[in-house]
Amino acid sequence: MSFVNTKAIVVRASDTGEGDRVITLIAKGIGKINVYAGGVRKTKNKNSAATDIFAYSDFNLYVQSGKYRLNSAEIIESFYNLRNDIFAITYASHCAEIMMDIVQEEQPADDMLLLYLCAMYMLSEGADPELITACFELKAACLSGFTPRLRSCVKCGALFDESNYYYSVEDFGLVCRECGGGEGRTFSMGEGCLRAMQYVAASEIRKTFKFTLDDISKLQFVHICRKIIEKVNEKEYQKLNYLKKLKE
Ligand SMILES: [Zn+2]
Image (cartoon, rainbow, N blue to C red; front, side, top):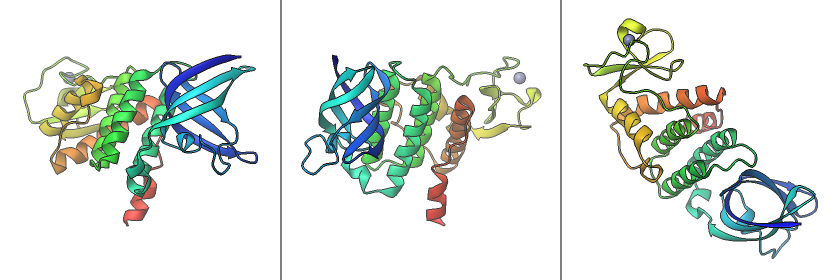
């Protein structure tokens, strides 16, 4: 038997047995792991809160027969404010799904974990969830090796001297009008959206979310960042559709 201490966030929790729970963690220095947490759903269990979904906790684990099991856990941050806000919690779930798709089993991904924690912090502080989520999506794409090319046309290298730009999802970058900008799966954007994308791509992780955008630029930014992460992970994310129904 070996022992492991790690700080981790709970991104999935499913109840099992009489009072047990299987949790999926994104753990510092380890990556994605499943942990069997015995007895945590029983009343007065001292590890209960620390193994709740979205809790960031200090975990003492042990490995038995190749499987992680919980010894004890102490909560560091519960993101309490998030838990009472259906909108914020749905954005947090959406970002967690993206992170789970990127982080591999037992492949350390501390940058992704830090990015997610920063996003959770911003969401729990009441920041604009659409903007935070879009920043998360774009930065997550960059961290997984798909940084969009945002300085010149990806096809011909032309520099831009205009106020309208085209982003090509297929080409992971800007394309000029001569190279197909405005056609097919290209999206039009203005200066504000482009500057925001350039900022997120180049920023330190902790500073990723620290800017504001006017309404039109935000609409473009939110739309394009979603397309980028969906292209990277080859998947359409559905969780936020539920919020559209709530808003109607
Ligand atoms: Zn071109």
